[in-house]
Length: 335
Ligand code: GLU
Image (cartoon, rainbow, N blue to C red; front, top):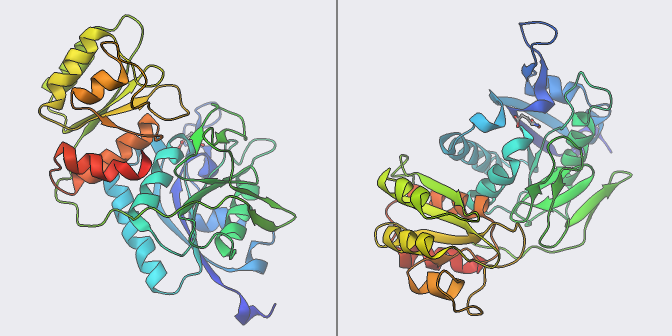
């Protein structure tokens, strides 16, 4: 390939373990985000042979410190890169929140251009650091024809996962990213990119942010709960609530009453704490069952897990007040 034939790929670095080395406190003080986007790219042998890489240090944060304002700004910057004719974008960041950030980008962008999120589980000072291999695989996916129109994907450990399915499933292993609902959608082998599962497009969420103070709470229901957390969250003024119920969407009776009271004022979305499968719609009829909760005004999350349902509801509520009916309509694509 001639130099002028190479495509342009933008790497947007947000921080995370992939960019972490020992901080100023010296040995034993722990690693902190330090390396720039340029440094990450420079650490990958052969990267400049396959693409023109433009690296930008967009944020320098552990991923738990990213927020929705950061992601709205990132989505705008990625949209601009798309308008400028960029072939693909790779976002590097901490793995802790990738399952949320990748889904948020997927929902905000809706581009033909591939947007690939990656990171590392082992920092650059550790034996077997996985950052360079993940970045190389991510760039290959961003370049590939196969990834075009697939929405935002997470590339990690030579696997390709759709943003809508992917979850972080382990605290430290490099194979932490899994898609329990349906598995990976592809992989990278010897530099070849394979996408073997097509992801149906879902229209992106459009419109300016008008309520950046919109807050959504996520509560997981456990054995013996009586609804105090739900009442406290409602009283605290959250604009929406996602409940991770047991099994197919079931809660104790007192929790059902608290959820019904909350659902009179704010959208309350019913997800499952199991981590895979759909929230049921019409199987069980006992008090606190899915049919009871839906009758009480809760909105089904379908097969979205609690984190993704929370991200989606947050994106909707940041773009203006939404009635429960409008939220239900927006969630219908996943239900
Ligand atoms: N294991 C995480 C990472 O991969 C820790 C920090 C973070 O998420 O930023 O980056």
